[in-house]
Length: 228
Figure 1 (cartoon, rainbow, N blue to C red):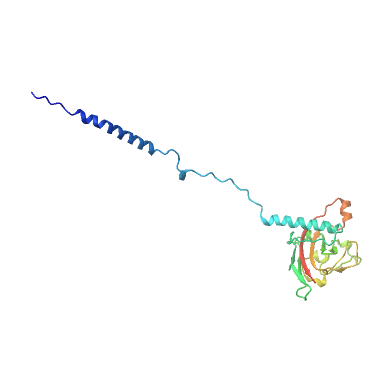
Figure 2 (figure 1 turned 45 degrees about the vertical axis):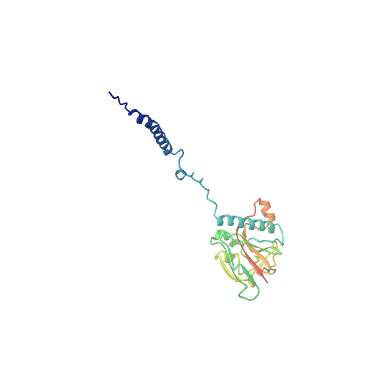
């Protein structure tokens, strides 16, 4: 009798390593399919910190110009002369137009000085700081009871009697004179070349301001550059 030995067990043994390898590969694939970290494209960028709004250039410029005019007038009221003044611009509703004038002919000597529209703002001394001679006055406000022939009016083109009623003065350099503090002798306003600083101030008497303990205040100002 012939006995046959079954070989069915051999394939099973041969498959065991293959199945094990396939399981390992499959396991690695599953493990690899899970991302170890969030992809860069999905990382949310931090929100930028809010930036405080910067002041407008106009507001800063106005404050700087006002401070420069105030320092200039303080020195002039104290008696300083020949002080350079390089700042440009105006403030307080006061403008000087055109900014550059000259003595070439009647057209180039024309100018327009615009004071604040509010009469209360114009109710101050109108002073001019000349390039070399220091402070001159165009007018100081006074009441009706003070009006008399004794009041010296250096320039009728721009005077307090006119400034009470109007704020725009179209004139020329030939018509403008000024008074030195404490003097009653008018003198030519536009004379030496340079920058003429027009300003409305609360007083031009340094001694009186000190006695009252009142700091000088410039409420409005502008400038003309004059070339003879």
